[in-house]
Structure formats: structure tokens, C-alpha cells
Length: 359
Image (cartoon, rainbow, N blue to C red; front, top):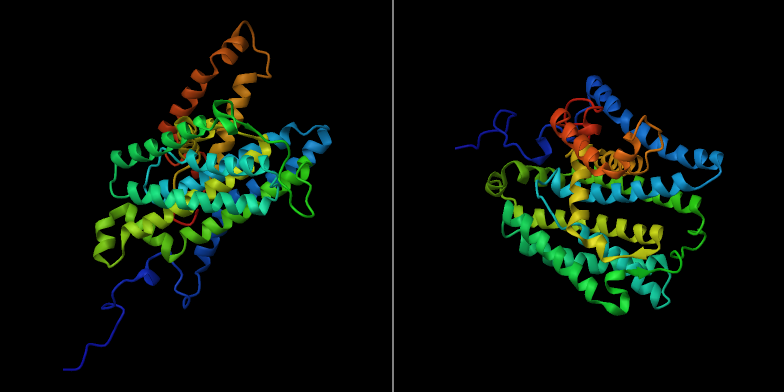
């Protein structure tokens, strides 16, 4: 008996034929091209605005906004890393700030011994971060749900208390860094050059994250979020893909930790605290889970509103100004509740086109 010829009706759907993935043989329809172009406009606008910040700062004559937006971009980069497993993989990690601390302490400890090369500091941070992430992820991914959340939290707290116990590196007071890292041809002590470096790293990391989530690997990770048993039935090792996604996510956060240490010239155990992990989750939720630039927008909303409410530059009648600056966390909480209730797709999500092409 001759085998049945393969036809479109009898072909088994593979990752190459999953809707939304390019097969390499079909041309993109004009309507789809228009949707993708429309969906990319918010991202283009965001990066154009970030490029204009140094111009505005130079015009105003001070670098306050450079430092503020640099902090937003660094925290946004960390949130983008977390979003790979949270928004796309469905893994809620309450301990990802651990890797922010690993990157910061790699810079601080090496700088204390006279090693100021940014490449060596970054290499050390990524090596230690990868080893820790592999061990933590291997253990945590044996469980799921609430157990996964609690184990990631437990590991982060273990390293938090380890950092506190290292008295030779500042202990609970943190570690002061005397100077920013050295990169040949770039003066990181210049706030403008440092800002451009952070923006360039953010742009490259965002592009690579886009390629990752749109790749076969990203499709499997997203499939594991929807139904891991079905992915196993299709022949994929769900745990192995999830573990690799966890390690990649941690490496991005480690990179953000290296930048944060250079921005603040300080490495603190508080960088590993569960509260900062919660802040990163909140940034992802505010901006939009499962969107590429949502975490960056969430970081901008988080840091910007925190700065605005805690200082309140606007004079309001009566004691309203003092009330807001004193109890700014309460007003901040109201804002979060309103976003969660009325912006289910997040702040960035409502500005993107409907469909699966906004990532």
C-alpha cells in the first residue's frame, strides 16, 4: 500500500505552521503589514522620546532628568527580563531581585579589589548569575503555582541575608563604589555618555527579547504557559525550555544590576529584597504582561509617579500638598488599583493594536 500523499489537510501542525509564525515561503499580506506597522508606532515613539531626554536635559542645564530616566530604563530592563518568564512563560517569580543584587555586587566587590574593567565585571556577574539561576530554576521548576512563588522568594531571601552577613563588603550598610566601570573610549563618569550607553543596551536587549519570544523557543515557552502537558505530548521537554527561559531572564536582570551599580555607585542588600521583586512584578502588570515594552512603560509609570507624589511640585490649596507627600503610598496604591481594574492589558497594552503582533 502506497503511503498517503501529504496535503495541507493531512499535515500535522508544527512550530513552523503555528499561526503568527513566519514559514519563510509565504509573503506577508498587506493588511498584516499595516497591523504590524501600526503596532510598532508606540514602541518607536517611546525610543524617540528617550533619545530626546539628553537634549532636554542639556537645554535645562542640569542632569537630574538624565539620572531619573536612566534609573527608569535600568529598572525597565530588569522588568523586561522578568516578563520573559512572567508574561510569556506564566512563571511568577517573587525572587528575581536576587539577580539584580548579583550584578550590583559583582561590580562592587571587583571594584574593591581594583578591577574596574566593565567587561570583566560583566563577565563575572553573568557567570555567577547563570550558575545561581540554573540551580535556583532547577529546584523551583520541580513545582508550580504557589509553591514556585514561595521557593523563588525563599532563595532570594537566603541570598539577601547572605549579603547582610558579609561585613567585609559593607554588610547591612551596603558597599560603596568609588568610581564607575571603565570602558575603553567611553567615559561613564559623564552622565550623557552613561545615558547613551544604557539606552543602547536597552535597545539591543529589547530587540533580542523580541527575537526570542517570536522564535521557536519562545513559541514553546508560550505554549507551556497555556498547556504544558500538551507541549509534552507534542514531544517537547517543557521543564527544559522553562529552565532555559528562567536562566535567560535572570541574565537580563543581572545586566540591569551591573548598570544599576554604576548609576548609584552603590551595592546594597536591599537590591535583593522581596519588596524590589514585588516592584518588578508590579511594573510588568502596570505596563502590560506579555507585551515587549510594557515593563518599560510600567517602570516609567512606577518611578515617575513615585517621584511626583513624594515631592509634589504642584502647590494645591489647603493642606492637600502636605497630605499627598506624607501619604503618597496610599495615593500610589489607588492608582495601581485603578489600572488593574480598568486597564486589563496594562498602560502600554491599551496603545497597541489588537492581536498578537504587539510583542
